[in-house]
Image (cartoon, one colour):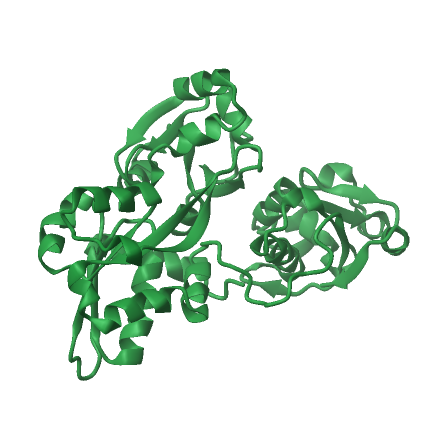
Length: 402
């Protein structure tokens, strides 16, 4: 699970993108590794370089950005090259400018395509087909690791009409993700950025993440390779090994990359997984109801081992002290006696988008005088929590309490 906060990551990423090159020095550095690559994997590569440099007492210098910014320097001193997609690494090999060793190319980790929308999702975007509606203004990136991303998503169902409709709604073709991030802040007229999920982290306070269904979702890897110069440095190969180690995987996972399962034995039940989650404790985590966070973590745990959302059937039953988490802003403020918006709105919307049934006990509502109109969109009312939980268990649902 991701144990690092999105806020700290976004601050780190902003600094890294501004600096472009970072050096990590050991107390008595005897060797320097020069590492170059593209924007997407850079934050994770950089954090891994810090850990690796500390472990071996060396200096690792990491430079990222569009290839044109670092190519000339990398021709002279690059030891390791990393890229956002296989076609980028293949092009490095084809041109021969960086003297990449083809045998050393190592696929690292995957990330899925995603949709970023304005906070609160004012256009009501739920999946890729909603981006075809008239009046939805979309930004895409047409360079680096996002080359062909939107086209692959739009073409996944084999219908040219989807590509035609989507392309009409593209209002900006950004040359890089760095440009796209800047444009997202400068142009509020843009409703949607179609990108990779990893770009939500630096924008978590300025964008909501809408997961893409399997019907339109695509995945792309990042990879790393030695140059001929790097082959003469044993620690260069060891750095790539470190990136694929459990420690490296944990770092990439914290930056929202998809990593292999950490366990050796797969689950015995991989299909039609049914779980009922009892959420009744008024405890909080990262300013959100912790029970809701645990439900989302449960979904991500299954997804991390390859379980598709279509095989997950999860009901989150809220009652008792946690019942007020599902209220709209006005009744939430009245109940808490604080003039603040309900901070659980986004995560409840996200759970609904993930297919989770968010339910609230009717008896809890009656005790406080709440009605259906007081509830956030997508929240279902059930007559009573305990009979509902028992009924689902009798149907074969596993029971968890958060």
